[in-house]
Image 1 (cartoon, rainbow, N blue to C red):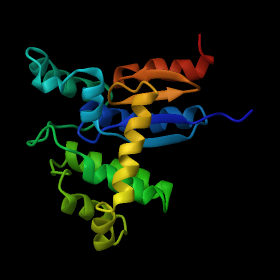
Image 2 (cartoon, rainbow, N blue to C red):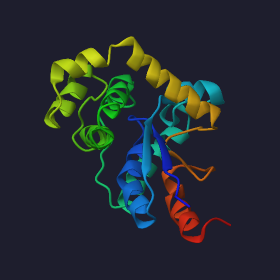
Image 3 (cartoon, one colour):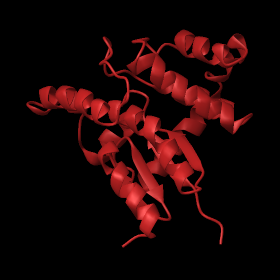
Image 4 (cartoon, rainbow, N blue to C red):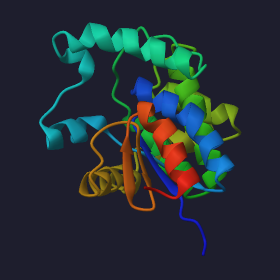
Length: 201
């Protein structure tokens, strides 16, 4: 029986989403699983869960800043808190889905490059121009990218993917679903790996 993919939901403004993106490929490869890369909009998730960004919550904000960096060190992932944080991630998220329609591998590389640009190089990836620069570095026509992320069908694709995530119970970033089993958070990566190793419990 063929093995199903790991569904990976993330927002480009999420430090934990970034850490998840840096680690999930190793886990997937170790267990012969593909990954479905699914950028979403956390703002929609927050509305659905009646919650708010951690940085906006009293007490949790300062702890979260500390934990972002500590978790990155734990997973040996380069990281620094961006000077503009959090951000709206529509531009790169739309870009991912446009690229995916042409080349799934290219879309994945774009997502990884966006995360690196934001959480390592401190670039404002909410800017369509910055997102286009990242795509251009991967060989994508810059003008075509900028036009595509304003196309109604691409805007709708992101809305549909985000709503589909909500309908599946996705409540944060990163969120993984494997064989119907949900895992929320980069701190669940070891459990996700063990689940794949043991076939569940």
